[in-house]
Length: 529
Image (cartoon, rainbow, N blue to C red):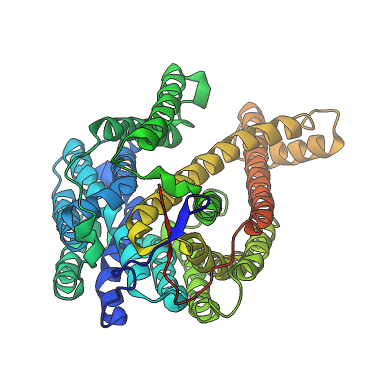
C-alpha cells in the first residue's frame, strides 16, 4: 500500500440496477421540481410583498431562508443517506418539500411563509445531490456522461424556464400557484421513487449510529452566517456595517473549527478526507466559479433589460429562455462525446465559448436589439453544457461508488455557494461601478463644456414653452442627470460582462490539473483513510 491507496475489490462496488434508464426517469423529476421552484419563486417576490403587506426587502427573506436551510443540509447528504437509506431519505425529502410547498401557498403572513420555506429548503436541498448520486451509481462508468447530460438538462434548463413560467402564473393567476403546482408533481415523484429506486447494498453496510453534533453546530453557524452576509451585504454597504463584520468573523471561525473537527473525529458528519482526491478538489473550485458566472449572468441580464431597456418581467424572461434551447441541444451532443473525447478538451471548448458569450454581451448599448441579447444567451447555454457534463464526470471519475453520496453533497454545496457569490458579486459591482462611472462623467457636465451647454439650452427652451423658466431649468438638469445615470449604469453592466468573460478564460489552466478518467472494468481505487 503506497500513498494511502490500495486496489481492493468490493463485491458491491459493481452493483448496477437492472434498468438504469427507468431509474433515471424516476429520480430526475424531484430535482427538476426543486430547481424550477427555486427560480420560479424569484419572479413572484414583488407580488408576495404586496399581498402580505411587507416591504420588498422583508420579502427577500423568502429567498434567503430557503438558501440558508438548503445550504446547511447539502453537505450532510452522504451521512443522511447512509444512516436512513437513500430511498427512504429521498421519499421523505420529496414529501417534506411537497407539503411545505402547500403551506407556502396557503401562508397567511410572512413568518408562516418563511418557516415553510425553511422546511422546503431542508427537503429540496437533499433531492439534487441524492438524484445525482443515484445516477452516477446506476450507470456504468462509460455511460456516466449520458447520465450527467440528463442531470445537466435538469439543473440548467429549469432555471431558464422558471422566470418565464413564474411570470405567466403570477400575472394570470396568483403567486400562491407558484407553490401549489408542486403538489401533483411531488405526488408523482414519490410514486416513481417508491416503485423504482433501490438502495445499493453498501448503503446498509455503511450505516452509522452516531451523529457529530459539534460538527453539525459548526456547519450551521458557518453556512447560515455566510449566506446571510452574501444575501444582505450589499444592502448594508458590506463591511461598513458592524453586523457584517461580526457575521464574517463568526463564519470564518466556524469554518476553521468545522474543518478541524471533521478531519479529527472518528465518524465525521461530512467526510472532508475526500478532498485528498485531486480531481474532486479541482472540480469543486471550477464548479464554484462556473456557477458564479452563470448566476451572475442570469441576474445581470434581466436587470439590464428591465431597468435600462424598460422590458417587463415576462418579456425579459422570453429573452433569457433561448439559453435553455442551446443548453438542451448541446447537452445531448456532449453526452454522446463523453468517453470518446477527453473531458479536458471538451471543457477547453466550453470555457472560451462561455467567455465569448460574455464578451458579446459586453457590447451592449441603450439601443441594442433583442436579438443581440438572445444570441449570446444561446451561446452561453451551449457553453455551459460543454462545461457541466464533462466537469461532473471528471470530478467524480476517480471516486468509488461508496463515496458518491458524500461527494455529491459537497459538490452541490459549492454549486449553491457559487451561485450566491455570483449574485452578490454582480449586484455589488453594478452599484459600485455605476457610482464610479457617474463620478467620472459628471466632471464633463460644466458650463465650460460647449456640448453640455448647448444640450441644456435646447432642453430649457423646449420646456419653457409649457412651464415657467425656473422650473424649466430645474427639469432640464433633472433630465440630463437621468441620462447620465443610465449611461453610468450601462458602463457598469459592460464592465461586469467583460470581467465575467475574463474570469471564464482564467479557468482554463486549472483544467490541466485533472487526471484522465479511465473507463475500465478493474476494481475501483478505494481511499484508505
